[in-house]
Length: 347
Image 1 (tube, helix red, strand yellow):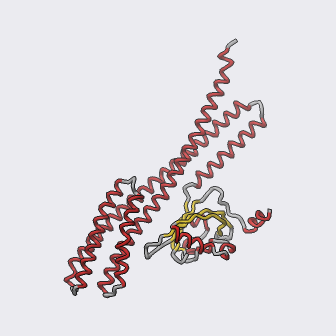
Image 2: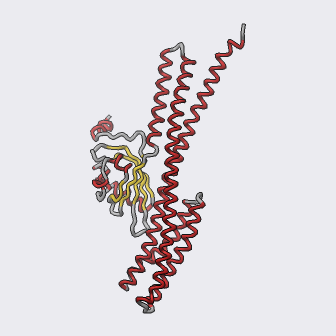
Image 3: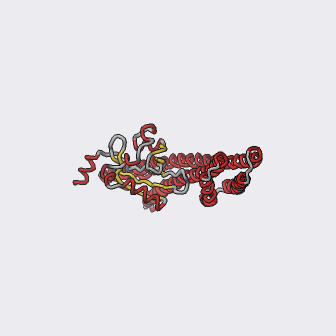
């Protein structure tokens, strides 16, 4: 007898099983990385939003002082004082969001000094105006303020460029990892198919069931990788009306931008939710909590329904406050008709 010959198939089977297990771990690790890159894309969107908010605060301050100098109306100073009280907190929040980015921290350090100087110059100009100085007497301080404001804008543009660069890198990482995941899934499928042939070559029925399970697993993972990087981002004004609409929103909701901008967010909700006051309730909760998660049936342009999960962010501090709805499409988001929903409920 040849023991080696008898144990060779068992060794081969063990090698194939271990290889299959390793191949299964690879796509799972790749999916984890893909999820991480998706989270980083969302993080970049949040950083860009807060940079824009800080810029609006500076513009508010500049507008308030210029309005006061032009009209002597003290109401313009309210805008300036509000901006003066907000910018420290906004800058600190940006430091937290960019804690892992030395380049952005250096930009924030420069911006801190520039904003201090801008607001100090504005204050000096206001004091001179209060003393009765007018016209050319104010020109030097106003020119100095403009120069400082231009330099602050330049730093903010540099920060925005850095976030744009990071977004492109992270999106490219997403794409590359998705391609690797697909390749690994295909390789894993072939490996598992080989395992099935080795283990069940004498059982045709069992072999077919194994192949079907592999194909089903591959399809679930493919749907996940296809949709994990798709986002719909909708900006809502304080009255609940749409003011901004991206490509992901068009794909999800079915509306072109020119059709939906200016419309109330209630058009996305079912008549039952509107009667129950759900849109206004979500806005109110976001007002109090800053962010609210919600899931339920939502209405597309074609009146089909989507079982949709969304996050509503509320910015309360800026006089140009906005709400942001962030929708992350999922593999199960399949439009259905209202009748089909009622039938399902009745069953």
